[in-house]
Length: 391
Image 1 (cartoon, helix red, strand yellow):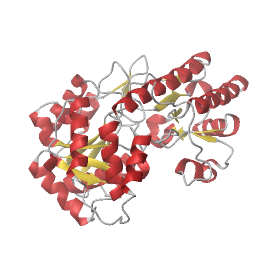
Image 2: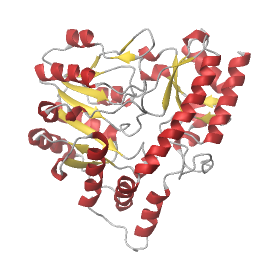
Image 3: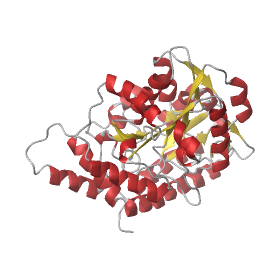
Image 4: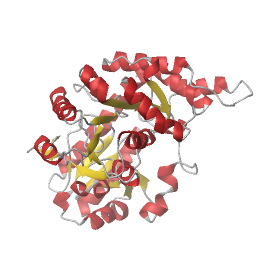
């Protein structure tokens, strides 16, 4: 391997969110934080070097996103995922959540229904409610192996003329699914029939494990392209959330113009010059790093899987196809959600996301971020092993 993920820089005494909020969220600083979805893995040197080079120029002022940055992203997406966008399709955004909020504002009105598929990343709930839209929950269903799928019958039964937007998480956070073409096409046909716009959050699209393959929703066919707002970026793939830069791709001009009305009202501007440089460097130089990162993450996942198999009556790890977020089924421990959280904090000394925060379908589950160094993963396994052994 060219890159070394065995250790990483300490984030103690920095302003890293997952560390500074330990006391507030977990009541103690004596935990390893494995919750918020950024990596305790060093941001690639080729990104940092590009930023250092730019800082040789003594003026850091307002700057437009250079076309070369979006061109690098467009090439990456075409090479990796088989869909080609054009420069005119691309808009800057500082985050996928902000992009989603603008889509809710642009493509629905107060009182309209917006579909979310639970359990789901919490801002999917908050964004809908904050814009005074009605939350239409279409819970995912599980098969006998614990694998999640869409509940198409439930979705069909709930849609009406006031349903305007579907918020798709692809790959899915927190359940780790990579949706198949057949699954996505079922969603597409329903949305076409009912004139529903699709906001497709594809921020985890570069964190997919072999043999699975991410299929952009807009790549299904021309009709899909015409109803899709695609949100993508470097934050998860290269641990660059702190650069606060992602993008939105909208190929349909009518949809793009409507989206830009909301976009322009909040004055998104063009972000930071250093973010532009970092964004472009990641897409131009990150292929090998991305491949080796996935190998490392898979090793971490397999270590966690092995541990869960040891205590399978208490805890199960669901099959993962993408992301670095393990969805742990802890219902075998027979603990309430409150006591389950206490177990992880006080006995395992680990700070995880409570499954209930992803919707009531997450009751009895916990989400663990395994995008950490090898040394940190060994410590997580050690702590969880000890806690499960004595519990």
